[in-house]
Image (cartoon, rainbow, N blue to C red):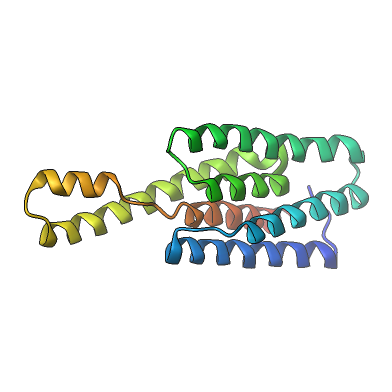
Length: 172
């Protein structure tokens, strides 16, 4: 359980705003700026330090839990990036979000992010399929164009992060 202070509220509201900006930017440009991801990471570090000072848990184990979550997500995400499955900005944003969640909240956030990612991918697929039907000349062209479509996964990451914020507020 986290302790809520005015700073906690400010950090969580700023996180929500940054995640919303990341999702919108990913929809518009298929890009999540490093400055935005870095800002989320710095907010995450501030959140962990603030919670370690307010809460009953010792500082070092709490910080290690959050850093471990971020490093683990980044390593797995780097593999997904190398395989061409996930974008670099998405990997960095997910790792920055993991700084907020720590190991204890990471699984539900990843689950919601995955579900939201499936919905986003299906939506993009259906839109692309509909557009390709009217533009392409044969089914092979359709299949190739749809296979190369980009998915703004920042939307799904934002959904996971907003879920996390909502859970913190509901459990407070």
